[in-house]
Length: 319
Picture (cartoon, rainbow, N blue to C red):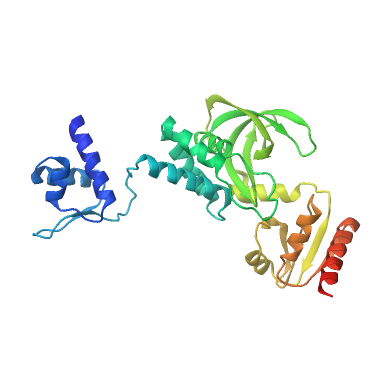
């Protein structure tokens, strides 16, 4: 296929993606070729996997139809920037598709030319939304994209990491998966120095460095990265203990709440225990307030004091 033919077919594909239907003569005029050449190029597109429908007769024409597989798409500069920003937004806030959006964003940013990467970065850094509450630390979109590519390529990384207690250390890891929980992102990786699996909060990662060394993927224990990370998070120590025995099944509570994961432990068919323990008294109160049915609470004195103070303020406002 000559370069002229390649360029012409790319233009033809671009036309088919911008309008529902084209006549053969219209396409021939746009491409400055004969109708017979258009028919041949349409056949070449079909051979490449593009589902192009055609209708014969005076009112006939060509249109790009839906196929069983997603063919490559041609995007102009504005469309590419819009999709990159939309994927970044989805990765940071839309429940249920964060990881999928992040994988797609990593693929797109890898092929974006420098001029478009600059536009995407400018939009991401200058566009803000109204937040009615402090959502806590957020992951850097650039770091998310870099880690997503490293997970895909199984490239060993080194970085500085600050632990929950404030200690800083250098880590060398084999990144495997990115997992989101609530407003926080975590990297699930195999720590090569400790020869063990570790979970790292992205907002505590600094000075990320590529080694260029790729290794085979490691199977995650249990074959469920999200469940593995959830179990590690639920087992981590917290400042304030709060255990709610809920008069409802674990399935019902799980269906009506968000981001509790393995913190819900079934007791029997009609009872479960929700571990609302946290470093933040406010988040404990929010977790308990979101429970859909009655419960009894076993908690530290400072938790009970905080809850009573909040209840008293509410009662005073109602009187």
